[in-house]
Length: 80
Image (tube, rainbow, N blue to C red):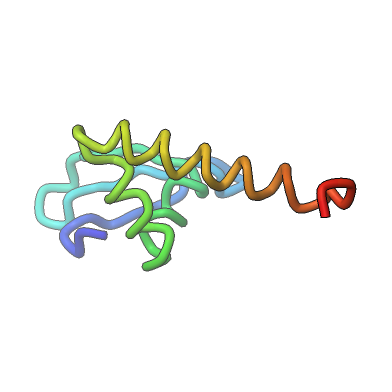
């Protein structure tokens, strides 16, 4: 996360946030609690950066298919 941005809740439940420039006070971003988790957790941020690149569609599809197949085959005891 950019340290020049200050995040504050915009509702009573603290589910939505505004990111304001610390110097000007201008709103730069809006986000949900989940959005901010992806920015503040180093492992989730790494995944978001890799799969968020403009040329990562093929990698995402390949990795998703591999993970989906692995999960779906884990309970297939009839194949053992």
